[in-house]
Amino acid sequence: MLNLIKAIKTLLRILIFVFLTIVTQIGGIAYFVSLLLSFRFKMSNRTKRTFLFIGVYCVFTFLLVPLTAPMFGRERVKHSAKVSPTSYMTVLLNRNYVRPELNVLLDKVAQNLKGTAITINYLDANFPYINKFPLLPHLSHNDGKKIDLSLIYETEAGKITDKQLSNSGYGVFAEPKANERNQIDKCLGEGFFQYDYPKYLTLGRKNKRLSFSERGTRELIEQILLIPQLGKLFIEPHLKQRLKLNNQKVRYQGCRSVRHDDHIHIQLK
Image (cartoon, rainbow, N blue to C red):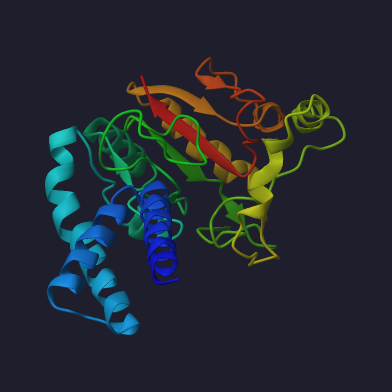
């Protein structure tokens, strides 16, 4: 019986390690270090062990990772008056790392948006280390070249705001109108069940009186398209049609991905 309990504890620790690694990349290592420290100092109290893990994780996330990520060609997204995370969970989970060239792109767009009410609210970017390490649930955010940006919304009076419709920034869609191309129904009809699954990732809805801002989102995209470092920009076909985006860099991501009418995906060349 004692051996069974030990085996269950070991399995649980392995599962926690794997989960934290998948979600944050460095969380599994922080968990392992906290276990070693708790064994070293004979900490049997679960609450103390939990706080120890939180402390170790914060040291890794806010001190060690920013110092070592440049060795892998990545750095944190640089915040400014015009650039900030939609949710600080992105920062806490280490999903806010990009190549320096992408920071240059964001800064140039921010400079071009000075004097407007439009801000760049970013969602998931990349993990700090190792190309090809998957940033789930994304298919391609694994090389430091990609970042998702929130759509722009406006109040009932037509005033542009930096507020969002969901806590995560994902999952509340600017649905196609009757006269627009409906790629969502096509993909779902072809069996790509995951296509609209971000609707389950909102972490709660808010600001229900806000609406999708066509002029604000179009202005943001037009400024992004001016930057030479941009390789591609993904947005849902009905929004490309609605916003009259004819630039060849504006692409469709395909049915194997997820729908892009709740965010914009941009990537370097």
